[in-house]
Image 1 (tube, rainbow, N blue to C red):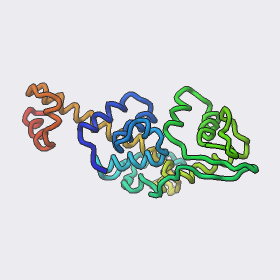
Image 2: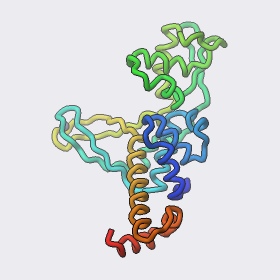
Image 3: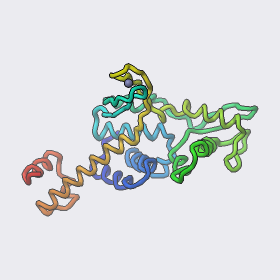
Amino acid sequence: MRALTQDRLLRGWEDAVGRTPTARAVALAAAAGGHTGEQAGDLPLGTRDALLADLRDACFGGDLDCLARCPACGAELEVAVPPADLRGPAAPVPAEAVLEAGGHRVRYRALTSRDLLAVGPAPVPAAEARRRLVARCVLDVDGTPPADGTLPEPVFTAVAEALPALDPRADIRLDLTCAVCAHVWAAPVDVAAHVWADVDACARGLLADVHVLARAYGWHEEEILALSPARRRFYLEAVGA
Ligand SMILES: [Zn+2]
């Protein structure tokens, strides 16, 4: 993937800022992959997050610095995560899969951002949210789409258990060892949240540069963003920023 130009990065940031985490991730994935918001919303969550990890790698590179708290002793650990560990297994997510449960033949698909957006952000009890999400992933039971989202219990259970294997990149975990108590655990990583933090910091830094140079020289935003990083740095130093 090509690094986003500063202009596209700022547009992606502008589309994403002030929105819910899921809507932000969709806006960034759209900017990163050249998708419409609709297309990005329909990507399996693992595909979306792999796109975001590639975006981060192309724009910023380097390890991701994370903080993790040991679940055993509570110690806070600093962890440097190599970019490759954020992507998970490379196999593409199948458009759909089939399983048998309780005598039914079930076609289902991976969870998408659109599913998360449809269920949230209104406060919904976790069990109810899970039931609705699983139901949205079921395309049909014995050839018939589930009416009003209700599923036979064995179908619900089987699909809920099968979803992680269909899209393993949606749940990236790091094997960590606590430096204090040697506890070993698999820590989940919120790839979208980390990428957003980097994009947000970068966009705000660019806009702060524009602010300083526009005030000092009267240049327009697009003129300042068109400067090479080296020239911009020179002018920023020249005005004492
Ligand atoms: Zn510990």
